[in-house]
Amino acid sequence: MLIGTAVRPSQLSETAYASTLAREYNMVEPEDAMKWWVLRPDAATYDFRQGDDVVRFAQAHQMKVRGHCLVWGRYNPDWLTQGHFTSQQLAQLLHEHITRVMKHYEGQVFAWDVVNEALDENGNVRDSIWYNQPGVGFAGKGTAYIEQAFRWAHEADPKALLFYNEAEGEGTNRKSDAIYAMVKDFKRRGVPIDGVGLQLHVPNLDADVPAVAANIARLAALGVQVHITELDVSVPVGSDAPRTDDLTRQADVYRGIARACLNSPGCTAIQTWGFTDKYSWIGSHSRGARGQALPFDRAYQPKTAYRAVFEELAAGRPAGR
Ligand code: XIL
Image (cartoon, rainbow, N blue to C red):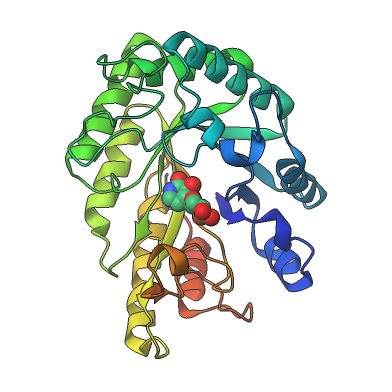
């Protein structure tokens, strides 16, 4: 089982951060360092320095690196989104980006989120620069641009595992139905997809764990791997310390998700979106209303949530699976 976390290269020089990371995890994913806005300061430049820092740390500590993400409608640099490119130019830019980045990390990044968050809550393809504004040549053609990205990615690094990563499609709903239908279609037609990433940012302490388990099972039955990619379970914080029973509920959610993954042989990785409450996107994302979403506290002490996951991992997969 791969146990991973998102990491920030700027913190790797902090002793407690680096030692906890190296001791507890066997996989890392750059939280931002391999996104367009970091890698591509301008159209002509690739800046791999931050991504390389993550890879170097991982190699020094025998950890795998998950790459994130090659195609996303958000967090793109202004030169790209405001560049008034034609579809043909965008297709060329994206094809080149996928190829350059994957070749740079060939043999070092074992799996990539090729496409991130391309569907809306109704399961329709989201408007984006890559789809239809103006898109790379497949506007109005549903998942065809996603397919093209996977084909380019497979060409660039045939050994890398290729994932579709999504938010809020973890249980059973219209979005997860659409992911399932897309993966089924891709597998049937031989589009190179190896897995689905379920982000699992849990904002309200009540993940529908049985629905997540059912969704993992149906995806695995299509012959793809499932990775839990961005798990965090935030609690209300405000001006007071979090309530003890909220931290207990948080641990229950962590335990349930870990168990759901362990119970499905197709679920091969559990990754959290950071590991210490000292560094987490939740605070700014929720404007301070929620926080403390991760398994270690700000002083790098393991929380109840950590122990819950640890116990499930120790219990392991059910016999015979
Ligand atoms: C977030 C990072 O945590 C932040 O540092 C950044 O400012 C914005 O992106 N879904 C994803 C991640 O796939 O890439 C996002 O990460 C969180 C939501």
